[in-house]
Length: 331
Image (cartoon, rainbow, N blue to C red; front, side, top):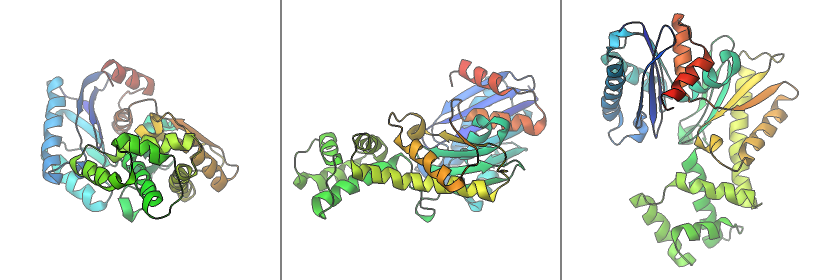
């Protein structure tokens, strides 16, 4: 079965692969685990095996082979530097794919969620990244390399900030926070003497995860807790600064609406909406009166990879149709 395009959204928790033909029909969808070498115990070696396995599984659904794929767009978390891009590109060539574009998964939110395929995507899920595709098709990413880029976001970051804020209150004369009671309840402890062991043992054995703790910060902020609110302000300054810098740096004319798409579980699934509101306010402060529209991604990010691949080779791919067919396939 020739004449296929492939879209891949490879995350730190789960990944989606989708095949489409030239008529816009979905030929196969696969849901698999992480395709981020930073989240795999075996790092690059395990990623290479996972890429080949997931690609084979998807192609088998259509009775196809790698050389039947005319073009592929792969957005993978963990592709943040030139060295990472080069190494993973070599892996992809070994799978038999000959024409493809590899990028960070944050870029997929632009074709998936921004009208016209130009805009900025802010991702806040397992990790934190801001990526832009401008009107000249220039790609530029901010963040994604942890402490180096000061990524004040991602589910585990909020959880660890909650843990440290409570530690400061208990042992460093820090300001009181309602997060202490919330965290004590989660840990099943009743006094500060148990805190250190409960936290460190829980993190070490995996029963306490930073991502699972992130809702404590948001719920505390929702109750008006100033320490929790300061954490969200710190995060909002990080995102708003990156978004505004990209808006000024790239081909985003001030006369045209700038579209900013929020994706990732922290942005999309979190009940408390304080963080997006803070980001929007700060962006407007940075950019003045220029028109900016903020959107929450409704489509699966893999739709962006499919649409991008289709546009690259002239396939017939309507955004609404692609999203509908992916929904029929369970995404």
